[in-house]
Each structure stands twice: as structure tokens, then as C-alpha cells.
Length: 158
Image (tube, rainbow, N blue to C red; front, top):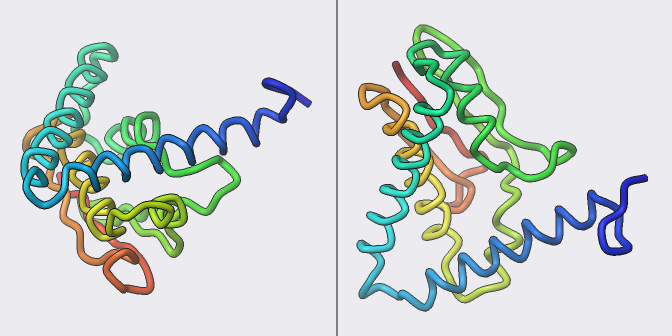
């Protein structure tokens, strides 16, 4: 078994992800309502820059559903490989992106930041990332667990 600092690699990575998500939520909570729009704009810009940089590095256009999803899967953290993550269903030029469980909410709940706010920022980054890959692709959130739905759903359309 691969070990990092005396722990299995799985426990080390899980701990790292938890710490980062808690810290992110604490920072957003500190920004408060007064700076929320600025935070949201910066997160979108970071996602867009990340998508554009990855596109430039790889040089493969994200103009097909399978290529677009590969870019997302390579850059968008949705927990550990053994965690339940996003389910993707391609149909008619779209990817329906759904979750039946949110891996992030338990970490966000350690903070005073509302989970719905963190979820919105999480989606904002993904929307920016997709725009950085291809400005004509849209990402629309339909529902989220953080806002009380039983599952999350978003549609990515070419």
C-alpha cells in the first residue's frame, strides 16, 4: 500500500481535499455578502483562465461531447475515485450532468458559509472553465442538493 506521511495515499488525499474545501468555505464566509459578487466574478475568471490554459496546452478543441467531458473530468475535482460522483448522460448535443450525492457539503458544513453559496461558486467555476474551453458551450444548473433538491442536475450544451 502506498503511504504518505504514515497514512495510506487514500487517507492523505481525502484529508487534503477536506482541508482545502473547508478553507475555501471559510474564506468565502470571511468575504461576506459585501464582497460576494467580487468573489463570484474572480472564481468565474479563474475557471475560464484554467480552461483556456488547458485548451492551449493540449491543442484539442472541445467541440465534441466526449472531448469536452474529458477536459472536465481531468480538471474538475469531484471527490476520490471511490466516491459517488457525477453521472454523465449524453443526448442530442448535450451532456446531462447529475449527482445523487454531494461530496462537498459535509466539508462546507464545518464552516459558517452557507452550503448553497459554496455550491453556487462551485458551479460558477465550472461555468467559467467550460467558457474557457469554448465560449459557445453553455452550462445551466437546473437544481442542487445544496438548495434542497434530492439531486443535482446541470446541462452542458454545444
